[in-house]
Every structure is written in structure tokens, then in C-alpha cells.
Length: 341
Length: 267
Ligand code: SF4
Ligand code: SF4
Ligand code: SF4
Ligand code: SF4
Image (spheres, each protein chain N blue to C red):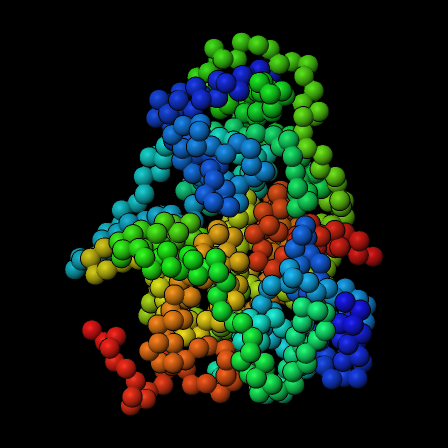
């Protein structure tokens, strides 16, 4: 659809949350928990931390949570009876105040989970979520969205995007049918037209630090460059922090939890950074050492995904670098791959 | 700084060591581990008060060990980790070249464990004041309050295992968490899975934790989980008279039987 531009008053934001709530929609938004910013369900605008750079974890958990039941079952003498999850029962949800890199991250997840056989657990939840992203007025040195095709005002993946244009006013971009439907709930607050406003003036300045096509090409060619991966990853300790905070990391594991009578099958986040990730039952591990796991992380995002799904698996949000206990800075590593001759 | 760089360069060129683990400037205001194998890399070495990361865990990393003889810039926590690892037969005497940086910029060289032991005897190895305070606060709580405190903290846990990966004492090739026959600890990062993981980990570090704080620093969700193992330091000391990371030949309190062991903790 043709995008529409409107003006909303900051002072009307509380009403938005009230109206979403009165429709029974859970509202997920960034909140402060000490030093950590979490995306969680909120009741009022006061709980929402709108002035933060971005949340510690991404918003992916709205459609791809860390623990998710995918099947229930009972066991008795007659055998196993399955109780499938009701895929129609997911609620309409509003994701409010997330960043453009969260919204565009869903595009990568759509590509991954949309492959055959389609992953209905993700797709159905995603279909029920309306994403209101807030463009970024500030960035930090870990951000590099503009180097991977995004940007502080990038609208990809958002249904509505809000940009602060003054102390009192927000430019509202209505970008999709879903966004139009949700904005109908507050149409009375959008009487002023926003056409002609240049939002770029209100966005953070995020410099392009590498040429993405070059990085994709060089990553693809570097599979056998063991020295490169080893050099980059000697300090990597093989945890799951980078993958778990990432808006596009989608690897998962299945675990059954059961007693003698019943059980549940759970889908859980997993990470290619763990040595256990590729450990075979035989004891053989095709990714024996951490440098091979680090290579996988980069190759998956910058070689395999572009090749197979036609998207780069990174939004340049820098969450992985901020979360990494040993300062593996992905922006720096990609920049150094970009200059390989 | 130049003294450190000169020293490390000399150690590398006379083949005393093949790789030196130190610090370099990192992103923003961070410092991070640096693995020096040549003079060019040595020039990146830095050392100041912000170099608090305990680098000792890297001494056991397979890909680091592969370089051969290792040297390390150790802070107090790393010195204690080295002794604790030695007592657990993970590092042999003379295997690692250890350098300690004094506040005044001079260096102490350790070539054997006994000199580290002697040095630590006269060094402050205690828990930081603010952490003492937190522990006092936890100990003053009722059981129920403490239970609620930890449940609230564990709710944030995403089971990324950065705490385990960062801990120099969590080196088990197959961690209990990863064992699935039988499955001791639920893999899921739900209430039960998080709780079991943290209790199991605290138990496995009781009397082994060298209070470096790496686990809590590593946690992306800002969970003060170091307090769990710190709280076990005093009871172990009171009951068994043992403190981790002070002796290279210490017998681990919880796996050593002595006839005069107190048994007052058995209910
Ligand atoms: S790889 Fe890092 S920078 Fe890229 S999207 Fe994931 S968390 Fe963000
Ligand atoms: S890059 Fe950092 S966060 Fe990722 S596995 Fe390595 S140490 Fe953990
Ligand atoms: S580092 Fe933090 S979030 Fe990760 S497993 Fe440990 S306690 Fe949980
Ligand atoms: S448990 Fe935490 S504080 Fe104790 S040795 Fe391990 S990382 Fe250090």
C-alpha cells in the first residue's frame, strides 16, 4: 500500500496504549530492569522506556520465544496421544517502541521460518503481531545498520513507524495494511497531515563502515582461511550470548519433558557458538574448535543466507557486540573481512 | 607499558614462551584479551586499572594451548585461578610463565607455584566491599525473601551459559548441564531449568570459586550470580578451613574425607 504520513502528539501516547489494551491486545515494549532493557508486556505508557538506545535482547521473542511448547502428549498402555498446540489461538499483539533493526530482523526470520516446510509456530505468531517501531535519534559505536542495508529510519518490517520531530510531535508513517488497521484505533489523534516532512533530519547519523556486497563476497570466499577465523576468535569463549540477543539468529533445539503419564515437547533457542551444537552421538564433532564455530556464525549470516534466502542475516544492531563478555565486536570483524585483498 | 611490551617481546624472541595472554584496548571504553605471538601484536598490549578480566580461563582453551608454552598477565584473581587449576591437576608447575603487574607499573615474575603462593599470602584476596554488602543483605533476608530475590533474578536468565564459559573453574569437558543420559538439569530456560542450572553450578563451585566475578560480569542479563558462589566461601572456610586458589596442592574440601571433619551440616 501507499504509505501515509500523519502527526501524533507525544501527549497522546498514553491513549494509544490504553486503546490497544482495551481491545485486549497485549502490548510488548521495552522496559528497564536495572541495567538491562527487556521487551515485555506492559499495561501503561509509564512502564515503557522510550528513551533507551535499544533493548538488550531483540524483539524476536514475540514470535520466537526462548522456550515454546510445540506439542503436548499423554502416555498410557494404549500408546501416545498427541495434543497439538492450537495455532489459531495466538493473540493479536502490538510490539511498541522497538527499533528499526528489530523490525527488519523479522524479515530475516520470515525468510528462515517461511522456507518449506513452513514453521507455523513462528509464522502464525508473527502474523498476529503489529510492529510499531520508533526510529533512532541516537546511535552508539556498536551500531552499523547502514552498512548492512538498514538505517535509523529504515521502515523494513515495520507496520507503523514513529519518528520524534519535536518535543511534542511524532511523525507517524502508516506502512502496511496491518498498520492501517491498528492506526484506525487512534485515527482521531492523527488529524494533522504529515506529508512533506523530511524525517532524515531527526535521525541518528550512522556512518557506513564497510561495503556489504564486498563483505558477502569475501566471507563466501574465506571458508578455508583458517588463520582469519582463528585470529578473530581466539578470545571467543563459546557462549550463547551473541545468538540469543540477536534479532535474526534462529537456531533451535527440541527437548521433551515428560513423566510416566504425560509430556510436552519444547522448542528452545540454541546457538552455533556452543560446542554441543554440532556434537554427534558418536562423539565426533565436525566443528571441533571455537574458530570453526565463529566462522559458522559469520558465514551463516554473510554467505549462506544471502545465497539461499537472498537476505543478509544481520541488521547491524550491534547487540551481539554489546552482550559479548569478551568484546567480540562484529562490526570490527566484518570491517576487517571487507578489506581482505 | 613499554616495559611490558619489551618484556613480552623478549620472552617471545628467546622462545621462553610462544604466546602471551594480555590485554589490548577494546570497543568503547572496554579492554579485552590479546593473544600475543609476535612483536607487532606485543605493541598493542595495555595495562591499567580497567584490566579486571580474569584471563586464566584461556590457559585451558584448546586453540590457545595449541600454540605451545604460554605466558599470561595475571591479576590477583588469575593468580588464584592458576593455583586452583593446579590443585585440580589442570596446569603443571613450570608450564605457564606468569607475570603480575604492580600498581606502580613494575612487574613480578612467577616461574613456579610456590612463589605465587607466597605472594598471595600477603595480598588482599577478599571480596569487594560492595559485594560484601550485598551478601550481608542476602544473609539478613528470611529464607522466603531470599528465594523470591533469586527467583526474580533467574527469571531474566536466558541460559546463554556465558557465566559458565567465562568462569575459569567451569572447564569440565562435559558439564552436568550438558549430560542428557540421564538429563539432570532441564535444558529449557524456564523457571525450573534456570533454577536447577544455577543451584547445580553454585554447588559445583562451592569451595572452588576464586571470587573473580567473571561470571557476573559476563552475564548479558546483569544477574549477580557471583553472589551465589561467594556466599559459599565462608561456610566452606569455617567447616573445612579451606579457601580456594591459595595452594597449588590443596585437597578439595568437598571431595576429601578427614576423620576430624565437622559433620554439623548433616541434617
Ligand atoms: S549479528 Fe549482531 S549486529 Fe547482526 S543482527 Fe545479530 S546481534 Fe545485531
Ligand atoms: S562471540 Fe562472544 S558472545 Fe558470541 S560465543 Fe563468542 S564469546 Fe560468546
Ligand atoms: S550468563 Fe546470565 S543469562 Fe547467561 S546463563 Fe548465565 S546467568 Fe543466565
Ligand atoms: S564462579 Fe564466578 S566468581 Fe567464582 S571463579 Fe567462577 S567466574 Fe569467578
